[in-house]
Length: 243
Image (cartoon, rainbow, N blue to C red):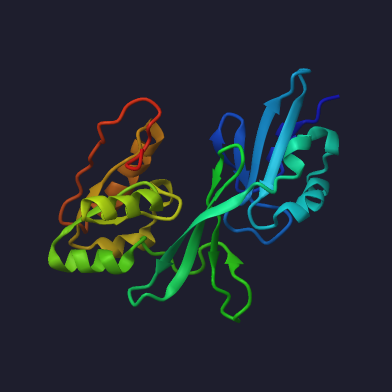
């Protein structure tokens, strides 16, 4: 009898559908506030459905505990996925206050299959290990640069992702920013940082990216000097500025 993955997913909180068979959710194994549990459902050559999973925070050692909390037997899971030591951190993006104080950071993690994950952590006020999630204060990426550019009346360009922001600033010379999790996670907390800003949004090359950017632009429009949208002349599988 096949495992009922639908029931498993329905019992989890914070479900975010990345694609038809790829999901993120809040991990039941720790106090998760930013979905760090990754799922992928696929078909085996024998026609059975199997599930792969990984928690960015708990890591490989917690896979047995997570499986038990999900109420699934090991036969539901990919045997190749159990030893997923190939997941590695390839970049760390820091979000700071105006004075440079670290507020939280986003890790860019990649596995052997090419999948990317972006867990967030913030400093423990008690001085312990970093805690999962962005913490109590949310700011735009490159906040000190954004404030300098707005004060000078210079252009600020908002793109989808920290990698694009860094590459854009490095190669084009303008001030670039983004929000952790992209435009879909743009919130009212960020709006005051763009008062009187000459702000350009560049969406990713997909319908979802454009929709999220439109929502973010509408939030900033009442306070910014102007908020044009710029579509990149890219085609095919290329998604963003760095492609």
